Image 1 (cartoon, rainbow over the protein chains, first blue to last red):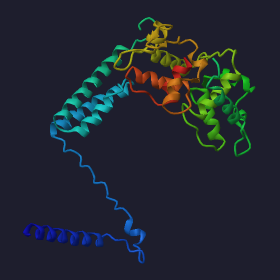
Image 2 (cartoon, rainbow over the protein chains, first blue to last red):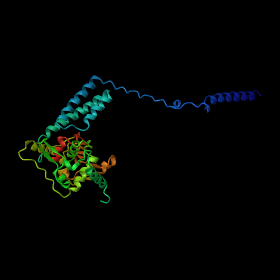
Image 3 (cartoon, rainbow over the protein chains, first blue to last red):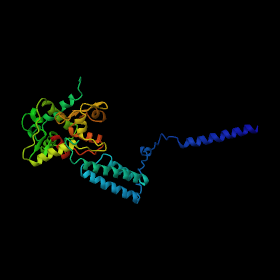
Image 4 (cartoon, one colour):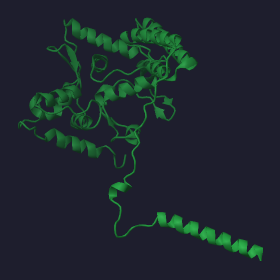
Length: 125
Length: 201
């Protein structure tokens, strides 16, 4: 008997709760909510903060940029050197120094290439 | 080739060429001689501006002179018009003359020649390495074309250019940029002296 009473009470309590939840979500046909109410919220994209570059990283980037500028001036800049410098600026940390040094090495090699091609011509290619 | 994919755009180029500008003039008014011989006049040395003048640059200059907007630099409508002029000039000789006694013209010619033979980029290759040394051989699926005739036979239609975006047409300056990228050198801007001199020489 006790069990039956317990089950009946539980069922009654649950049915009341379901009704109250359903009542919250009923659509009012006589007074429908405005369209504005359904307008989705637009969240502004938060700005991605640039990584703080260490002094060694900044020095490495400026050295690479200076060397690349020299290579560009003689018309022998390589394709990926500028990309490496850009990536270094974004990366920060150890990767920044690694990329900047790679760019610097490329720029130096490009300058050497320019010197080696001063007398480029028919016979020398 | 059956159903050449470029014919439509050559015809479009013809229509554009014959279209009058807002001031009533047309492209022909900017050039001397018959339409069929215009292509054979370029590239040439412009003594007034002291630079090599290409057909595409002359078309752009013509538009600007007549109050029209520029149309690209190496593909699209500019390439179609150039392709039309090249098609109607087929079979004629293009003779590029370096004026005697003009030091600037001779320098431009030598600069262009030097550019052609200079190794550049991370792959350390010159234009001549592929198009003189190995012309006719295969580079993967493609056959390397000989340099002789490059400047007279562009613009061209390339499957690669049609695949990515666009109609597949491109001028020689577009191709120069692509070649430079392939040897991992930074390409120069189109219609600047580096590429113009190479077209001229």
